[in-house]
Length: 110
Figure (cartoon, rainbow, N blue to C red):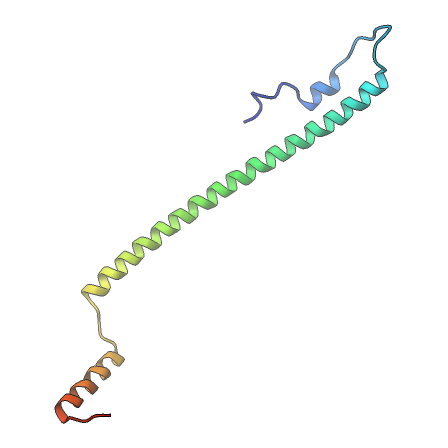
């Protein structure tokens, strides 16, 4: 993903040879600094790979959850429509209805 924008790899930095001039830099200091740069590049590469994997996992989880929400919405709609069409009274519903009818017929007040 980022490879097209990054020109150097840790190996490129490690393999780089500088020409030594009479008034040039101290090779030990340059090597020490380049070693630090290599460590940073390596760490950045591992961080990027981890973040890309985390992003991929989160996208997959998000898609699964969206699908689950869609399925639950469909299930709710099916339950609502079947509840309105074919609602079967329960025993409690029947007992309440009988009790109300008895009150009307026999005039009993509780």
